[in-house]
Length: 163
Image (cartoon, rainbow, N blue to C red; front, side):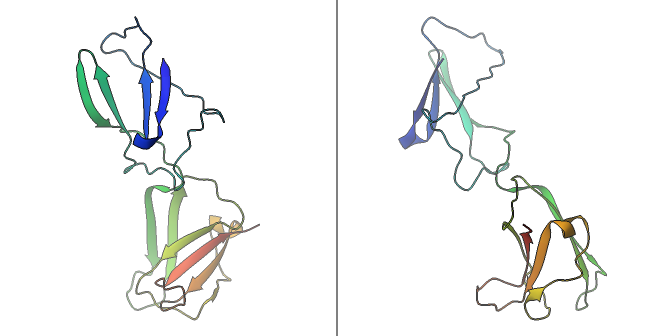
């Protein structure tokens, strides 16, 4: 194999050596060790599992296989699965406990933040939440910011990773 990165096309091209053939239906696994000399890097904003845009195509002497989307791609830098939010009691216009469950696909370090936008939610003036419970209580410092704040965000909960 010979591997080329075509920067203008954002294309990784893998070429078979001359006089080499691979039989149809053969599973191919290619591992490309990334080092400073090659320099291939993940996008600065990560890779989404569902909307990554990664495709495979074949240009062969026997025919062309048009680009096919890759079905299984590891997410990097995003929240995967199905984040959930639940309310107790689930009564509109009343005070409620909020439970958030999510799985970030990146390591979180001190100072990182998880921002939960809560459009049309009402609450007190901006402030830290003191009676925070659950598994995340030992990892995060939560802060509430009401709608109409100077940042222009809707009402939100901000969870900052503790040092």
